[in-house]
Length: 388
Image (cartoon, rainbow, N blue to C red; front, side, top):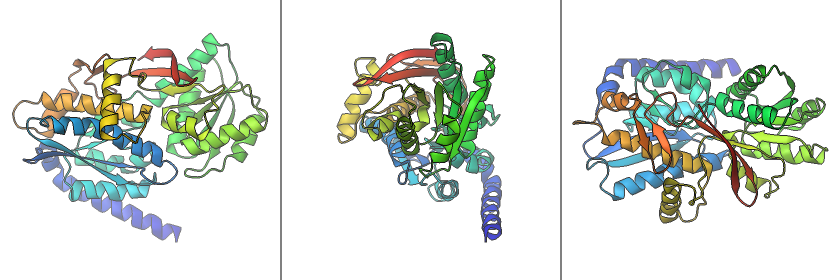
C-alpha cells in the first residue's frame, strides 16, 4: 500500500511539474489581471499548528485590507487566497496546483512550513512564479539560485547562532542539547545548531526528536535529560514544544534554559504554558510589536484592532504585516504594466526602505536580516539583537 501511495504521489507531482514547464514562459511574463493582483498561500489553518498559520494570514490581510481601502496598487485591489494544508506536505502540493492552475495567482506569498514548502519547491521553481516571504528560515530557500525566490525573514542558522553566541559568550554556557521535529524542518535546526556550536569549539551533548503533528515527546526528553544540558534549542511546533517544557520541568530540569526558535510561535507557546515562562529565551526575526517601540509597530497594532479586533498582536502576524508592506512598496515601484519579471527586478535591487522605524531592503536572501532575543515578563522584553 505504501509503495502504491508513493507511486501515485510521484506521478501527481511529475504531471504537475510537466504542465508547469509547458506554461513556464507564460507564468514568467504574465501580468496581474485587469482588476486585481491575486496572491496565494498554503498554510496550516487547522490541526496542531493552526494558530501559526492563522496569524501569518491575518498579518498579511491587515496590511492588504488597508491598501485596498486606500485605492489599492495603482487602482488594483490585492486578493489574497489562502488554503489549509494542515501542515502536511501532500496537502500543500494539491493547494499549489489549485493556486496555479485554477486561481492563476500572480505570486505566492506567505507559504508556511519547511517540510510543506520543501515538497513543492521543485514545482514552484519550474513554474517561475515569484514566491515571496515564506514563513520558514530553511537554508534551501536561501541557497537557491532561483531568481523567483524572495525571503523576508533571516535564516534558522542566523537565529540559532544568535542564541548560542549570546548564551555562550554572555552567560558562559557550554552544554547545549536540541529537541527537534523529526523531518526536514527539524534537520535544518539540527544542522544549524551543530554549525553554530562548532564556531565556539563546542559539540551537542544531547538530542531528541518527536514526530510532526504529534505530542510524543517522552523518549526525546529521556535522551536529552540524561545528557545534563544547560540549554536546549527547541525546533518544533508550539504544542509539542510546550508539552516538552512542561514535562521537562516536572522531571527536574528547572534550571535549564529553553530556547524556542521563531517558528515555534512564541505568543502561542506563552499561552499554552499558562504564562509560566521562567528560563525561556525566545528567538525572533522581527523587532518588538509593542506600539511604543516604532511607528510601524503602532501602525500594525492600530490596523490589527481595526480589521481583526478579536485577535491579539503576535510576532508571526507582525512579521507578515512587515513583509506585506515591503511587498506592496515593491509593487508600487513597478513602472508601466505590472509583470512578474519587473517586480522581481525590483525585489533584487538592494534598495533600502523605511517601513516606519524598521528598515528593510529589497534583497532575495532576506529583506530584514536580523535576529532578536526576548524574555517574557508581563510582555516580551528584547534583550539582544544581531544584524546579519
